[in-house]
Image (cartoon, rainbow, N blue to C red; front, side):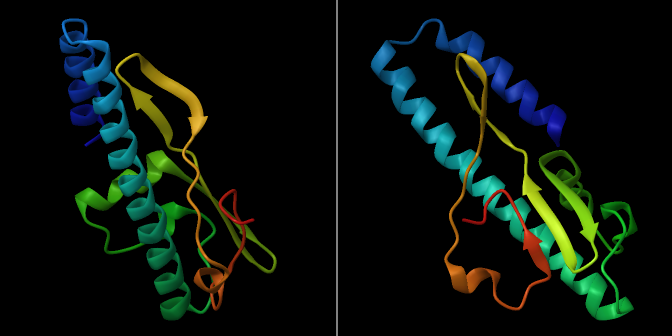
Length: 130
């Protein structure tokens, strides 16, 4: 999936050299929103797999490689999140970066979740927690 994403970004970058600046800005904004939706999906998907592993086995996985019953589309989590098991739960960080027609940014996507989102989860540390 990552290869298709890179091909799409590369193609759009080449095409963008022929586009007016205003249109590039609008397309960048659309890409930003799309990447945020993908980041949200991958982050929540990872939480779901980790919490399901805990429910089934009684412990959080030592790494994401221990997760079972993942589909091919679920493998994107390995590229966009980092996971560490802690004594009191786990740490889950989003590491997906923004991409634009000018290339990939150094800025990691920052999502915001309400306090209630984190309740009942073993995720005790995250770069998305305030």
